[in-house]
Image (cartoon, rainbow, N blue to C red; front, side):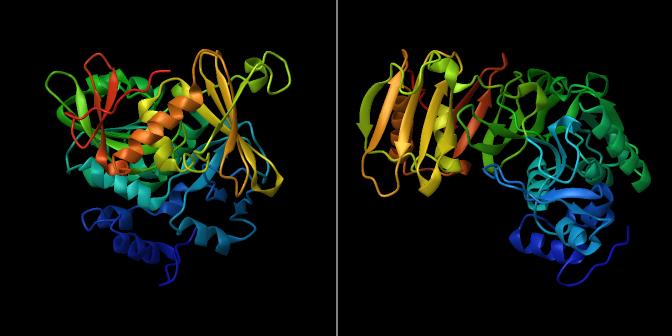
Length: 394
């Protein structure tokens, strides 16, 4: 592959855009310039597969259209490189994206949050394509980088790319949720897949004063990058630093029970109790309120079933398969029909969590923070640990 930088596209153009946005800082520019993204991207890619994008996604094949491939690689967008843990083949969209080259602005924003200095020992969980590991190797020296990848095929291709680029970090095929104890303790840990729980082994393998940067997702939905500092007592705490949308760490993926199990095999609304609400499902649909709701609720998740004309049913279900709710959204309506069944008032929980967030002047991601106790128990807070986020109990 040949690098072809122009003012409009290519490495220089992307660098200019990233620096203008503040994502790429001057101290990371030398690493960016030394590590070409295109060397860590396969021939076939699917650009900009979004978290809410369920439609068709066209792949770009370098062999068929090198110019389009080059433009995609040097755009500020994520590039899906693998679907369905490698079980998908062909140019079309698979079911679930399982490996990608992350959006460059997100990559460098997370590296900036990591505050990694030359010579620091760094653990990366999720090697992916290998680009992050190469950037870290350029920054701190490959002898100070440990990168762990669960998928053997992804690990092998990343290892080949790293070797070709002249980097030789410790590359491990294994369960990254357990860290890598032979090289611990670490000064910095970068997790490149979203988690619902910060792995306790990773906290234990980070030295006091060390920093862990990770995407953190709630069960309900919404996600943000958290920056945790490990304390002397084995706890870790810190603020969220911005929105994110990463693939889930494989060991923490959710496997949902179909709604038919909640309905007991009966047609909707089965034994559901009918009420109405003036709170629109659209109000709780954006990523930020979903995150705020998720920080307050437990074992509750949504799913929108969409119809023609913009209407949809917002399904709420609990992980215990004991309770469900459906809220019907109709464009232009002022009141919405609700059906619920089971011991939990799921829509009531969502309304209460949304009301609390609204009463706090609808804080953004950066006003929230997270503490992980020494026993691994997490709890969220607003502005400071002295103001814990309340738990909504169903």
